[in-house]
Image (cartoon, rainbow, N blue to C red; front, side, top):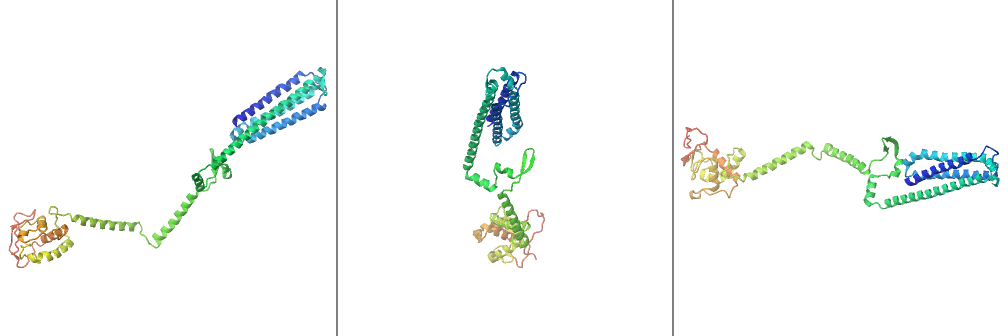
Length: 384
């Protein structure tokens, strides 16, 4: 397309140069003004043909320029003024040179011995040369116009083929976004142009609008459920629920880890809940040998400071867990969990110093708690 316009501009330049060289040469070759040849019918007919052809050339040139604007708008905008000036120059120059030739034709006739229908041979053949040159220009313009239209037709067919070969994904994408083709942008142009950036009246994509509507609906449902009917907990309530759940999980973990207690990790329990649970066990399995108050019957007194197998919490835990079958005490590790044995050992330790009535005499060796003074008074269950 650009090559065609360049060729067309170069052709117009040739017309200007030829017209300037041909017609002034006739004027300068002529002698002093004499009788005008404009009254000759042949000259008038030839001039009419010349002017008509010039008008056709100008009209055809404007058609070519208009067709080229479809794809080369910027190029045409830059060249439009110079093209119009060249066309006007061709028409004006042809008129001036023709008029000069027509005014000076008699002088040429006077110099020549022969004439054609009242016109000198120079004038006649000059007019025919101008007509022939204009016909050549018309043929060239028509060929360029045909070539231009052919390229436009190919471009349209290519665009149609590209549209026809679009994938289903691209069609779906254009539909969900409601994208408009470039050729329709002029319909939504608001006329605001900022540094080459145009403002278009495009609607928001449907997916964005529907997403916004869904958010509004969700907000209404959330407000009704959480703040009106209170069918779901708020963030503060959720925190309390989660804290309670975590506490229950903690207790379950502690309960599970408590079953890993042995004679090396046993500790003295002072929680009343643990001691009450151990008291029930003691009254079930220990009271028969040690009396419910721990004063001792078959088994030793558990309220004084004398112990046969050690008096700290770990020794008592070991005694209950493994027992002493040779002395008549069985092992309770298969009957109770490590936590229950630890609770039972802690309860036995809590019986020290209770001084029950008619206790059994002390047995074993005196035991003092760690950190007790060396001269600490001996506690005997027989003392009241």
